[in-house]
Length: 461
Image 1 (cartoon, helix red, strand yellow):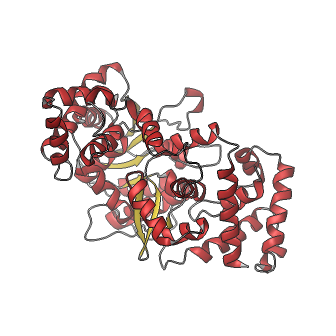
Image 2 (cartoon, helix red, strand yellow):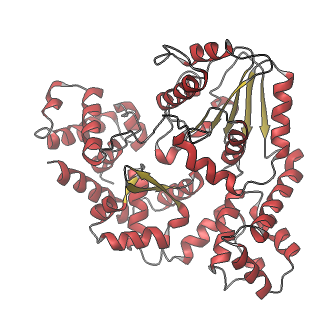
């Protein structure tokens, strides 16, 4: 696969610091010499447009080129990550829509909150980490806690590139300054901020900072993830979530009490199953968007509600993301040709089932596939007119694909009046990456990267 187009596309990421040559070498599985050669070709193409490149070396050139690309295609008056507080919202404006979505159908998880509360009661400070596979509801748990307690928070979002230490610190600093009226703290580091807040806490008060998806953090090796401090002042706690990893990859070493609650543990199996069933019953009986369609599907097959709940709960494998996709699909009629027992088993089978039903492999190179891989390669929120420009098709056609074919897999957000799209969940991103590995030599990847490169170059030179 031609690497220079991929390297160019990798630079087009508003919220990510540019990678150095060693990191690019690892990312694209090529030598540093090959990286140097490819970057040289890219610099040559853009040198007339950006004379500043002549006066810079190494990372300086990368930073200038990335900045110019971003300025060309993103010109909002505010950054994508708006860390300013809002008097009308009980939580940070940048995460408001995410939190509201996550808590809309929230059910159960009482055992998690009770265990965390016990940890707070028994320890003067510390780190509490919720561990679970993709789709087990970790982000929703954090969102629910934040909505109930109005805690400072940060959600690492890989598919939006909101997953760097500097973005985390900027957001948390703003939240703490606004909440606790900390003077002259605009440049303070996290330990200083925590010490200042601890000095303002009255008897019985605690500071809990909630951070979601530590596994999605993008950070250079060395030190704790997000540079979280080893020591904490009294009455200061962190509520964290992450996917499982082996002990040799642990990147949070602390000198204060810490506890992990692993949602996969056998002792929580029954709690998880009951929460899953509660969620299904809620959607069937209460959710105005889907209850009618689900009731019709169930009644047409003469299946008792209790049987439907039991069967779908078993098929979900205790994964809420599975339910988020499958229940709406049933309600919309996507599975009218299937019986209850024919529904996909587990999240990965659901993804594969949908992939096959859409005929992606049977009709390679169709627009729905091209749009999906553009989103995957750009890896940052982009408007549909940019997707249309890269795909070289009518904007209306791209809009239909986004809203009809991939809508449930995409997140829409308003960026300065433009609706931008990104892939919704890391589990679907993992599925797509696995598909790429299986079909790494397909022409579609080369074509998509070539079109991205041409689009960027035509817009600047």
